[in-house]
Length: 107
Image (cartoon, rainbow, N blue to C red; front, side, top):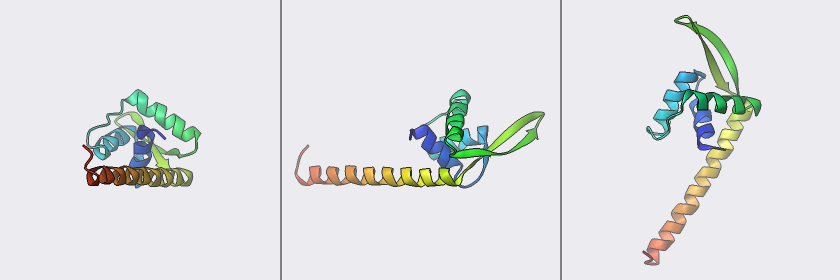
């Protein structure tokens, strides 16, 4: 799973959001490190929808424009949980190896 996909799914974990709301939440979650352009966002959303990890929740008119809200599916929540566990385990391995490196006096 790409970092962008992981962050989009994470942005939808607690509530449905429209495209711009997802962009803002991804930026907040990544502490400003990841800036999704709208074209990139919709490519990620289309792929995640095709994989049934998210779905269209509703559409609302806002200032004359239609906003599409997306929500995480149960399958998406499972995929997000599995990826979070994988990343946690990978970070644990890296931390252990760094501790061993420092304990051994390797610079």
